[in-house]
Length: 283
Image (cartoon, rainbow, N blue to C red; front, side, top):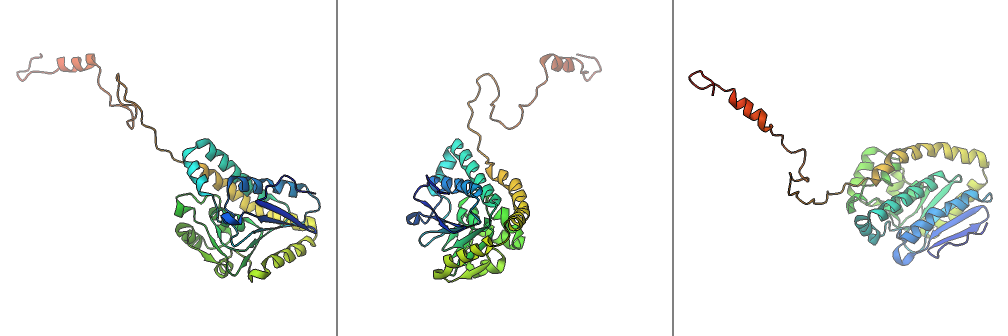
């Protein structure tokens, strides 16, 4: 199958039964601009329809795997509610497609994988990291909920205490530490990374297809269930209420809670008329 219509910032190469997907925007450190994010989300559908695909390798061009979300996109998310909703839908689709792809997906992390780049790498089935690479989930550090990244996958791979430490602080996780924690499978010399990832992909492609694919599906059901619980939380955003004009004929509608209740005039007058004077007679 020929993969047509892809932008230059996403490249797909075929090596027998293996498809090599390269994030190809090195000048921006493969940051997830809208065009790259959308292309990467859509590319999994042809893979799932192509009977010749038996494994996928995902890597980045240049010195980074992916620098994560695009800063102008962050700003627009704050200012444009409809854009934010569309971004959340795309983010959800990308997670669904990576976890739901029937063939094994191997991340060849050639450099820094930060934010969404880190989420993408760790969502793959196997993770090979260059000696010079590192992971960092920096969502919290830039004021975002880590709802599509480490919060979904990390508790299945490492101590939840360690997951909290790295998610709360956004600290870098070097390749060797990532293997120790369970976020990566092995560390590879930079010049050998892609070759080893493709070799591993071909090895998996030689396994009995149904047995391997259904085993992946069974394992990923845990991650997909976690994603169903967590991803809607990410899309919630508390917004400060807009100032409301004060009504000239009533209480300020922006006050918290209902206005204080006052006794009707007749009831107040009735209570007054029923009081006794000090001498014992009524008013």
